Image (cartoon, rainbow, N blue to C red; front, side, top):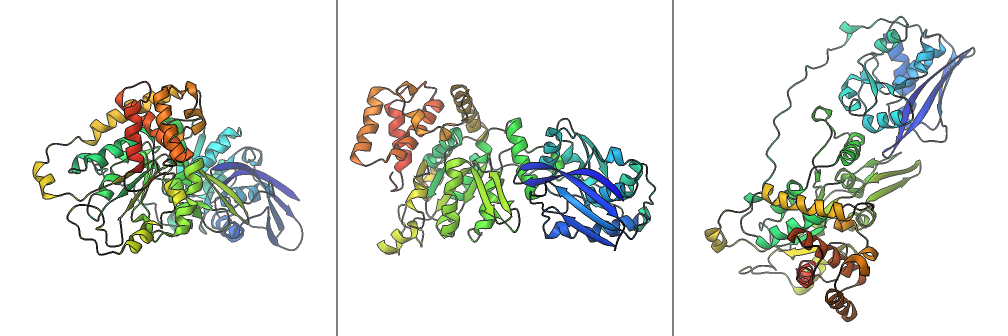
Length: 514
């Protein structure tokens, strides 16, 4: 009888759980049993491990093997446990360095020829291992750059199972000539210049709304005819946002690592991400999903960045309504039969919509062919509860020939980004010691306090709007958030009546109130 142990990591959402991989070898009918709530891809590890060990010219005795993944009650998914299972089996068979192997975390998928293939989610997995006191981690060569981003990790990169066996004092043959050499690394293509706000002609009101949205982290709705520049404006919002902090960069990079969209060659993601799913996207594509433990969708990949929904009324109502949870709480909790996964999703939502099916109900000189009922029905696809969570709602008129003739030099993104950065710095100083970072995150109870700094005339105007029903209580909170952002941009220590008036204008433009 032999017993071997090592470690791996199971990811549930972005949370990594240390998993002890135990292998028990005993006399009896040959068998390979895997227990501990494995999913289908993990159950197939039996065949991959057996073939990979044989490819290293290591004997596989005809014995009864039982592999336990502890804690057994935790669902485990994916092929990243292959390497740990193989090491545990070899340790149970008498691997000389079994004691050392029992202190190391192993991550990686095995090919039938023994190669160790990269897996998703290595960054949060290695971070969880280090946090649990297991700093020595063996990872695939293809994941080495990503694993080395974790402070305190002692990363050992391998290409083949034979390397791991030799590391622990065993005997193995690495059939280097038996498989194709890995492709030579290629230089990363130069990064394209990010879209610049200087490319947008006219649209002074929409440009100002974009600056306010960037400064306070506010959600934005753009309504206008086709070709007015709504998509151009939305694509330039990430360029106005400041770089991610160290903690934010690790969190955002972890999401993209789990989603399989992270290229470790460029290091941690330091710029706010930008996601723009097509309007035919399913709820699983936008919110996240999949069989077993759900994967992050576009909403989580846009964490600390921008989620842009072009042609928003064309999206499925199920997609639009499921966005209400992350808009309110900044995270998504996805429940499945095998467990729940929690992903961060604190993004800035930008919606773009035509005013009607033909797109010509807004702007001068545009002849709309839609009936009044068709226009109402079209925009009614954006529900009241969803619109109530959008701080800024503006109309984007079509650019006319006069605007083109009079257009002069316009501010580039860099100039606007400097003002946004100053406003963000003021907010961070004011919100120091609180869990909030931007005005858009501050709850209404804090904003409505007398000590929040509002003067009596300002409070009177807002209370009058609340009393007449032109603003709901949530709408008043949204106006207050916008007023604080306008004050921060203007260098004022608190909002005045001018800021509140401008906030009301930004909040109610385009025919939407509340």
